[in-house]
Image (cartoon, rainbow over all chains, first blue to last red; front, side, top):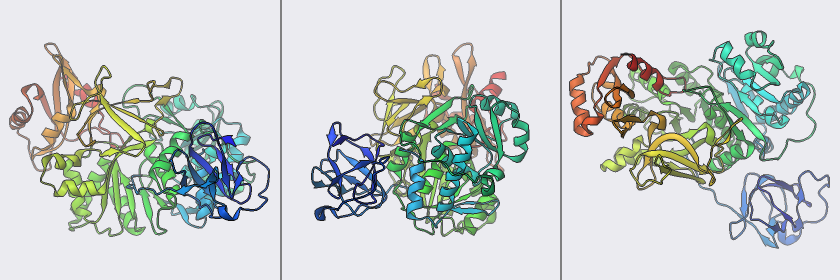
Length: 103
Length: 503
């Protein structure tokens, strides 16, 4: 468990997935990928271990994931086979509104 | 959080797509080529010991490459206006040394002698054989590092360097662009200068959406129309003066429509759009989505948008309140809050004129050497004057500093100009305050007549008196051939003011 900082980057301990924190509530958060606690992206540890079968939903580059309360939002920056969860609850994919192109 | 992350994701998801094409040389690179080039150039910049990467050149492939190179190397990106004189450029350059300068061939010689400036020609910066090293490691993910230092266009006073941190720019992109949302055949024609915030936003949002950018370095209506047709351009952004030139050219062509069936969306901003120009443009581009964007350097580009549906609604509505929204800049983007306040900072209600304040993740409001000018709650005073209607549509009324104080009454130049522009013989109008013994300031105006028309000044004055009040009627009205604008379409009010004050 660790405090999540806006703009911080984490990687999965069990797959190739990586995320960036868009917004997070204060305090320690038990964010997992594939059922295993995520690591700081600067960590040297290679992906190892098994994805928990209940957490094998995958994460897709460019998609946003939120918790039910919508207090936590992360952006997937690298595809992975694991699924994101907080305290065992899988995060939901966020719907995005289409905006007019302006630049 | 780092601007490089946007390119990293593009390179992972669609490496083989064409990213940028220089419309004048025809040269292109793909997302993977751009990513690899940045990896090598970042090593060159680090090796030079520079603390800033300065780009002083027209739009070319070195524009996106220098932006991403600086993000990877961890030094601020400083695009400079190549239209400035050598003396002005040298003064700015000395404020950002030690610098790695990417510039035009002739300026490598003329500016290479400036102390602590490592000058490299754009062609040499792009040449892979001169950058064989690769940078060690990844870029910083510290969201508070400075991404861009942008000298504001400075229609008054000495240029200030606006500070945009990685968190501001990335927040703007994440809140306004959906990743990989552009179909592969999408092409965007970019003609705004690379030293303008809209030019930087265009690079980032195109990369994140996966859209192919066609760069037009020196805008002419002829070149714009030709490139748009040749590359089957689907989206474009123009400033009002550019759209006026394009409309003039299309009128001269004599066809009913612009003959650009691929152009899905046309956005405009950067200055006040004359109603007659946007109305004609909507006729020439009947199937094109129009958007009006309003933003500032200090807010990482767009904060307000009047979208395509709202354009159509205003055109087909018989309600004057809805019709008037065509000259508004729309409503705030998600995550952006907007307020109108009076001189004492008191919140104003719908329809009341005051200064526009803005707050949000993308808002920096910070200048180098001066810190942030935002208040304790994070609100940035834009110095733009405006009003909001009861549904949140924002109307611009010029710069807050342009307000005319006549005998203690505050008059908005924009309000008077809007009325003058409805006169059938008036093509353009500018209203300024000039020194006056009796009133402190008096209202003065310049009008430009439409081709082949002459303006009856007494009738024009009568019209203003009837629609507004007698205090708004200009004491002086001159007829000029054209009004002075800068290259991004901003009216140079101080030039008009100086000229009329002499009389």
